[in-house]
Amino acid sequence: MSNGKGDTPRPLSVDTETYKSNWEQTFGNTPEKNRARISASIQEIKQKIDELNEVVEQQKKLNELNQESQKMALYDNCEYSGLPHTSSYED
Image 1: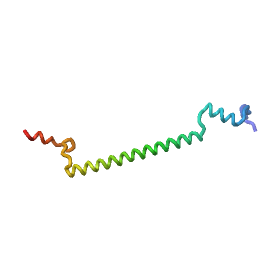
Image 2: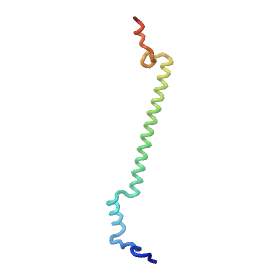
Image 3: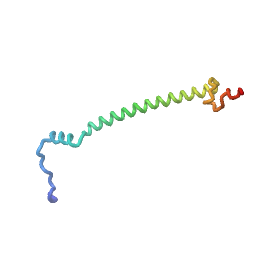
């Protein structure tokens, strides 16, 4: 069944393997390489997320320790308390 001019594809003048090789050289990566690259990128992102989560947990612990030390009045530092330094009262 023919629908008109250009209905049938041109015959291949090269074998399939050469065609695939030329396609890859011309247009880049194959889907398998893309999947591998994406998989590696996903692993890197997951690792960075884990590292960031560790930093967040450390910061939470530091904040808790800071709050506890302020409650116990271990530090008399006006920068943290918002009060003027006690030396200003010695006039």
